[in-house]
Image (cartoon, rainbow, N blue to C red; front, side):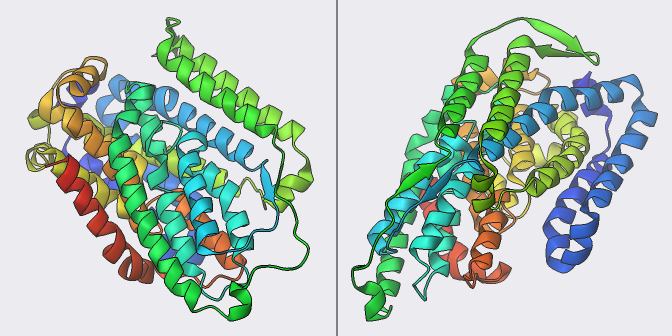
Length: 451
């Protein structure tokens, strides 16, 4: 059904998808007050602009596609993100830390490792406040938050489907859970080089700090402690549920005319249970210390409802390869290096989750036009794994290139500014940090792994 639509849809049916992504990218910069108050209305408008003509023009197949994206993609995605956000917001790390280069590197490294297991959002929430407290006496702090964004909020999330939304969507579309470990070389290379560059930066700025800041702390120190540690058990439950759903088959059921696998429903039920248990068993004081609120999840739920709705025509056209109206994209992006940079550039300024799906569909349309995902993705992994590695790493890594590349980026910036850190502007972030630091690192990754 989807393949028939992909051959019939005109290229302009992807305009609503471009519209919602450009709205997310530009409104917060050009009209932040309007966007803050009306982003839900803008999202709904783009959804209606797509869904109305889509259903009127294509009838039952269009309704089926809308139901399919809701049942198979959107609801599981929101459940996972909400669960990790809720559990992560129930863990508070306290204690006295001195913001020396060594301490900062250790904290950022810990966050980078955690990101693949508790998500980039969860890891950022866990580590950003201890990092800010450790550095509150320093004058030069912005570079630390920027490199934290590079590593913890982006690059570190590349190793499991729990790490970053694009990889979880790939998992939902048939990429095995443990396959993402195959990008460990690319991830380790990028993370270690960026961390080394950060260490050099921080040593330079540390030497420019006042002597009193650089002297060892002599007063009473608060010991390190974790409050809400029982939430780590819930994170283990989330990890176990996701892994089991990828290796156990429980058959199919039909929901709203769409086939959904029983193991996925069980996984989502376990995740929802873990989320509820975390909320009920964690004290309000801990969440207040973490400045926890439901606002970010509400925004993600609304924006992604529009993204998943409007992306349907683009994905359908790309999956039929050169038989669809977006054949020019399939013809232009051909080699793994092309996929790495194409997915990365779009992820820098649009959302990296739909970018991943877009280029996954492009690769399938390029190599296996007209073949269903259940058959095409295993073939892609077996015969052309470099393409999928390029899409995965490009989408995850290059979300670090701007504040709008990945959802945790703006969250980290906002928390830092609330703590008194003067963060670089949107273009200052790119010019001072992304271009001179990240682009050479990604060029190195290309040369080593995607030539």
